[in-house]
Amino acid sequence: EIKGLIFDLDGVIVDTAKYHFLAWKKLAQNLRIPFTESDNERLKGVSRLRSFEIILEIGGLTMSEEEKEKCCTEKNNLYLEYIYQLKSDEILPGVRKFLSDAREKGYKIALGSGSRNAKLILEKLEITDLFDVIADGTIISQAKPDPEIFIKGAKLLELPAESCIVFEDAAAGIEGAHAAGMYAVGIGTAENLPKAEIILPGLKGITIKDIINKLQI
Ligand code: B16
Ligand code: MG
Image (cartoon, rainbow, N blue to C red; front, side, top):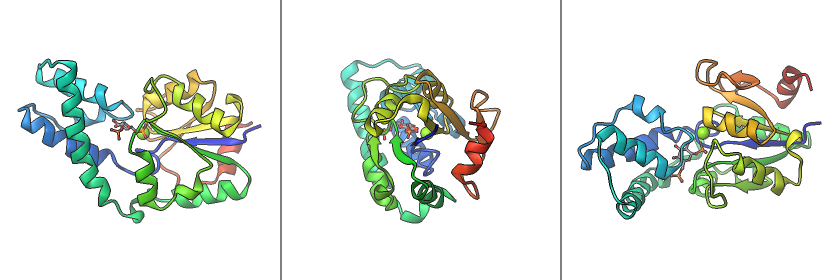
């Protein structure tokens, strides 16, 4: 029986990918690395450091670990300038309703985001109180596709993996959910997320009941 729902943040609850892109683009420009929106697709669900390593690969550059760390901090400062401006109406369509409906029905809700800025983003969207627990980038040592974030989320919810459904927009996240032994609902397209049990373009007009029915569990 499903009792817990674990939500990715970027791409499921809010479109922060565009802000990540703007911040990475500024950093890449400083390093004279060409960086496009289609390159940015490769960074979805990927950790900050790994994202930067992909950008360095695109530019054919190498750096010491220390320099990489410095650039990642610089990128995060650029990113935070956008996040400080984030408005509560930037929450993706249907998300607030989906979450409050699921809570009313007794489901436990966790965040399962690789972002170290997750708590700030939830505050900005004014939805912190819709979550029972928060598993974010500050409590993990392995980024998705590693299942660590989802395993920790379920642990915080005090639920076994098989009682949880993960909502994810990144292939790495779907992979992580499955490795954790959980169901995965993909937010996106079948093309991008072929392994998800269910694929939805978004949560607008959807209820948890629809999802449970579709999963036939
Ligand atoms: P930060 P998610 C991920 O969040 C993003 O999809 C990814 O693009 C980002 O690099 C990663 O968080 C780390 O975020 O730099 O804010 O710590 O999709 O797991 O919610
Ligand atoms: Mg995501």
